[in-house]
Image (cartoon, rainbow, N blue to C red; front, side, top):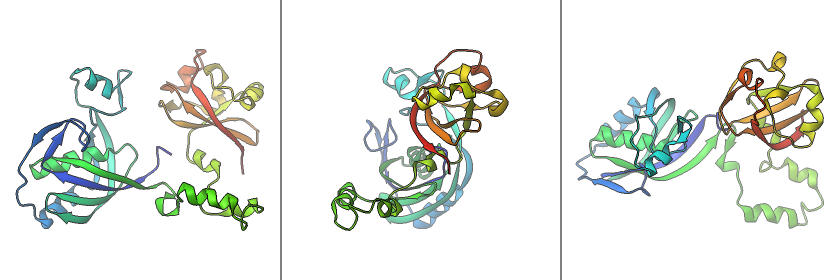
Length: 265
């Protein structure tokens, strides 16, 4: 899920700079917002499309030397800028009123919208922060297909659906858990560890079957599909550390925690 293309609707407020690059942070600067033409703003937005090195906010969960950036920030430790290579596929101006405007942005995984707001403030010369953010799409999942909890609960207690579980599962609000494993990295384990997987056992390095898995670089919090070759089941796991599968087999390190299991299609 984290690696999928995403779409956001974001509101950017001009004339403010904060330590977190959003409206909740400590204000570092307040600047007078000069005349900003719609034409100039549209040109700047167009120039941001494509691939570029984006500075990561210091108040973020991104890691450097095994430590979250927000830990350095809270301890007052200055570190070099951390940058991510990201891609903005599309960015559109939705509304523009005085010192605030709304954009719709379609971007790659790893893009910080707070950084986009900060970059816009720099290019406009007055500073800017992210004041509102709504994620509208991620991969195949679209906000318009979602449902509020109260309405979801009502389906289970309505006479139309209570005795028709198959109809409930066919509703667009219900998505098979197997979609979480789409395009995820698959790690195969030796068949002798099948029973351990069935018992919600975490993945350890010695379990990895490199003949099937080969070398894979895994990041902490990656969602993985863990399987035994020839089995009809897969098991969703979440990485609890960074690791490379080739290096991992040489240790008895615990690598993941179990999330879910399901039969494959």
